[in-house]
Length: 243
Length: 81
Image 1 (spheres, rainbow over the protein chains, first blue to last red):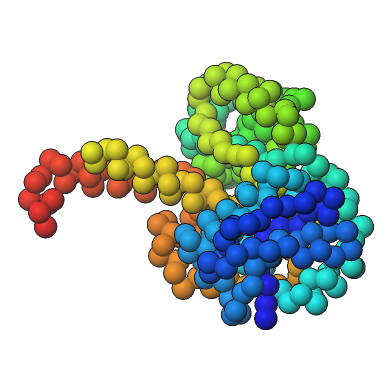
Image 2 (cartoon, rainbow over the protein chains, first blue to last red):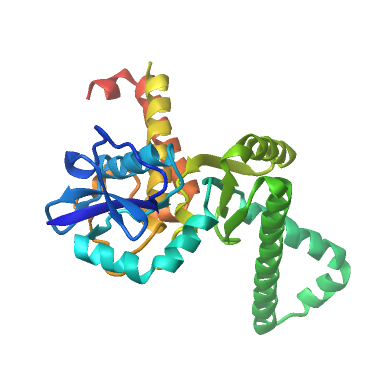
């Protein structure tokens, strides 16, 4: 029989799971091994169907445990045998302990920043071109098709560079605004995308009010950006050290 | 009533997408032990690639849905079809 794995935590804090139902409507249970507790449920089959129900069942069990203790969440769809799970814990004991210490008493908060990159690119290029407009105008008129192509290419590269600088600037600015409210961050910057920043912040549970206050101020400061915020999440972005 | 339903639908699906973004991409991994069947992918209204790629697309889809509802309200015949 296989097991579906939800999360792993230290064995020091007992976890209450009475009546908690997971994937396929099967009750969640704990397995203790080498000083760790893994929350699992029996799973008959090879694959987990990706549906609204299974996704929320996975997250529901983990949220239930997260309310009680610090944990490392497994990625959705982790099916193992008990022997394989125990062997993994034995071989990764030190890494797992270090990972748990890293996220001790913390949750993950998510911020997505959306911008209109095309509009910003256009505005930036226009500003630069305006500065050297007169000299450039004369040159442009005398350009052949090859030179015009290169000039267009140069503008494109210039636009990309400016966009990247702007996007990096937003990431640094946001980190700065959140300051001491966050312990760690994983930030993905995508200047070419509308979703320019996808950030995950590791925040101490007791620091959540401060984090929220800082984020609110930041949002008020940058009305030109759209923010999508969510959390608290289990520390998914800070648990994938073994991948 | 429709506005309220739409609002609830929007919140629910954004919540699903955010959850998917977390549970599919990240988390503790035991090498080779992740097996997902995507046969029921239609339950995710904008598709797996979209949710991993761009929140903007989600907003576009929501906007389109919004427009469809407005069109239906403007034209009762459409509602009846």
